[in-house]
Image (cartoon, rainbow, N blue to C red; front, side):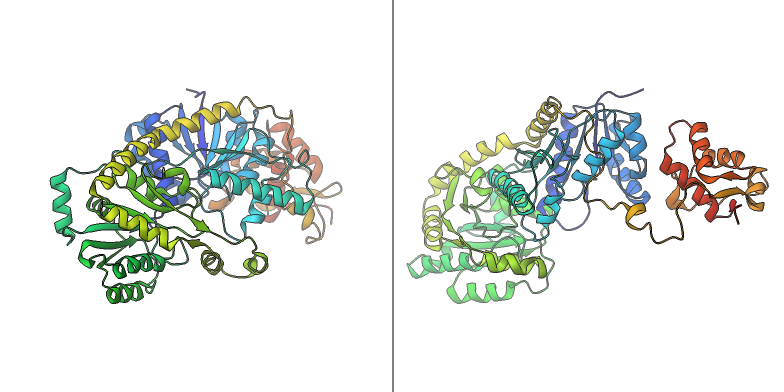
Length: 547
């Protein structure tokens, strides 16, 4: 049964590895989309047989009914050209805007009967190589049906700034090198998974975690001062309060998050906290269950992010869904998620107006060092942080009121609602006008036959005579068989080989052989015809007959 609306992706959306915001968001988006279930089929195109097998297992385990009904499908990426030609896809949605959208657009234009939308999502946007990555988006293959989905208003501005500066720097005409649209759709939160416990459960969790009657400030972030935020200003703010007379047993700071580093600075922070009298709890690599317990047992969520790698702020949504008031920096996507004075407080930030020296060195250094340098030039107002923390610590009614408001705000960010906004976007993109025949070759792709045409002695063309070899005759008669490497499965077709051997029983011009082969095999292109002839020459099924 042919489907009418196929949602497709090159990406698995379900990834193993460190617990990072990107991987969590991708998996949660897929769950939200499949709960909404707006399409006839959901097709994934992994790049290897191993990836196909791994993803198939995960999909079957997570959604057995969809899998058994064949509405969840995994197809090897090498089949993509044939699949695009054979079936109409409604949309391709990619989990990251960096890797593939521009080259997928070229493939779509070359193979698909209709120009379907291609969308992709922003995550971190600050790596030095991203200028060249976004340059690929400015391409004659791009159409008005293509869009980058920016997860925050700040990310919309950043992506548009990339396009603007690249266009100016390279002198690219907008008509000849169009750019994707940039649309704002936020990330979401799993409201079932992140739901506050009742008071009895909360008190039990606090006891289990070693908390007493103090006000617990939770920081949940990657434990690395060059990745998401510098933790030292947080301790400076607490130091201000303690010097001002705040009882040290009235507050506690909890630092929790993923870390890949043995020495990320935790010992230094613990020593400093001990010196100023601040109770500090550090939780490295918490499980999902432990994360929930930390949210549930805390009183205030604290996130003074200062790092350009942050774009959205998924933990802010999770904390608010758990009913926590938030103190956060007025920075990037954070300002989209916290309603100042209503669900929490936003702290003023101050950044540089000049970065020329960093700009010059960033492409020749390590990204984490560049991010560290830039983060150390972004100041979160420590005095304002201390005031906000003192206000929260001393007013339980304020915390309760802001926490209730925060829970209500997070309710509008369910993953199902986020998926529904994507569905609306995909449908609206079909209404955009596109050229009758948009470019089918990306200017940044390598034309291998042209660029490396000088490597071989000569190129396949008129005047090259070929004929069946002794082995070719044996294969033709069924007395032997060709050996095709696993990686070429689907590219060297046994049926096409049989037709080729029939046509080459007598010496024939190689170019004429390709044309006869194309006439005999419906839909066979020139490139594939040449590939089969050259493969047969390579593996001694054909031999040169022109001396």
